[in-house]
Length: 96
Image (cartoon, rainbow, N blue to C red):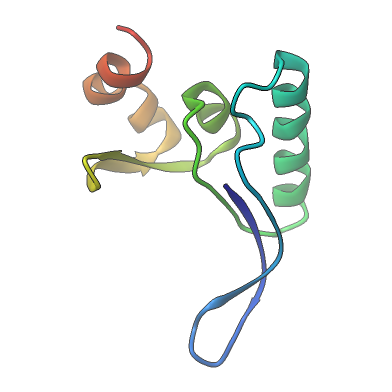
């Protein structure tokens, strides 16, 4: 899921102008590449992007920070290079 945060209400909740669900799931590589380009363009404009994605390659390509979850718990968080080089991520998501 992708949410584009445009502002926050008085109670701190984010207001979203758009939400896309399961765009990368089962999509051809060209669509995933275009989605990555769109996310990067949005972020370059100073808009924070929250990406919850099963496609770890897409997520690691567009993110600057990441959280890895296992059974609903955060098991790793940090800048993208720390997460990418983690044994947890390599074994669970990158086949290594």
